[in-house]
Length: 165
Ligand code: FES
Ligand code: FES
Image (cartoon, rainbow, N blue to C red; front, top):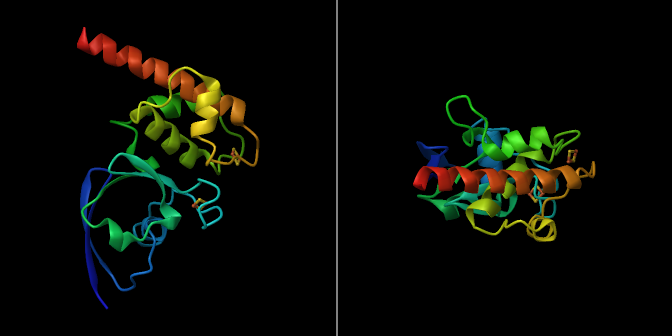
């Protein structure tokens, strides 16, 4: 069975032919397109390690069938930096030690970016923790993660205001 699929991944249009309708976006990215920055933790929607943006919204890619997203725009951790520069959320994770082993980090960063884009981050640590509760960190780096998202949100808002002034 050949299932043609057209996806824009990190700004690049990809024409893909799947031979199995059960392939998830996570497996497509990691095993067929060599985009291994997105991690497979639980493979059942419980850890958030596989978080990516689909049409600007956060999803667990391990639960998403690739064939259901024909025509979608996908952003993975490989696509968030620009011209060799880190995304502000990536830079803030480094500045605030928002990781230890790093396994959950791509998912945390994608979730943080998604939350900021959704306008949900605000300046309340409790709200950030709640909105990112689907992203587990076995190393317990939650304090740094929360601080990083708050700082990135504040820096991104300040940059946007400067540009529109
Ligand atoms: S690998 Fe997708 S939620 Fe855990
Ligand atoms: S940094 Fe190790 S699991 Fe989060």
